[in-house]
Amino acid sequence: MRPTDPSTAGTEAAQAAVRPPLPVKLVVAGGFGVGKTTAVGSISEIEPLTTEAAITEVAAGVDDLSHTPSKTTTTVAMDFGCLTIDTTLKLYLFGTPGQERFGFMWDDIVEGAVGGLVIVDTRRLDDCYAAVDYFEHKQIPFAVAVNAFDGKVEHDLDEVRWALDVADGVPLLVFDARERGSVRDALLVVLEQALHRAEN
Image (tube, rainbow, N blue to C red; front, side, top):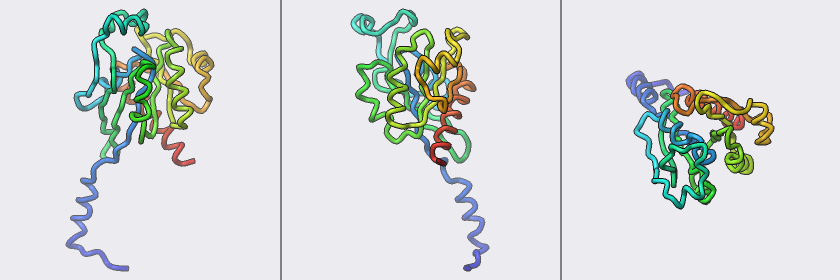
């Protein structure tokens, strides 16, 4: 075995110490107006990149605004943000558009992602079926996060799991898309799912 040169030992340690964190891609998905852009904006350590466009009269006739009457913009491509977990890991977050007419973009947005967070509004569970089905079909690890609008949810988690037909192995939790710590905890659950999948 070749002995370590004492003159380079410190340099090697320094290089290891400054190694950039591992980039990990996660997707934030869900129906229209469930809080995807809010969640990315709450947690991102950079000014999030958003592709928000004004909701026109035509779009208002297509998208259900009954539960989000104050919503004036919508994501038409994606949201992007990032979060450094520690010196070894950095999350890159990609938020999908929620409307079905933008579904053709999902494959490109999701490519390379290790997992996804599907955000649910219990007042409009129908809007979330497509996202759940997508991750199940692609066999991408995911968690379902029920957004607590006004601090409450319309149904308990067992009812949500049954309504969405989500497998028992998929984590289901309540969170607040406006609170950084709540979003962080939800993303860490997704990471745990991805790690568990990688180990099995």
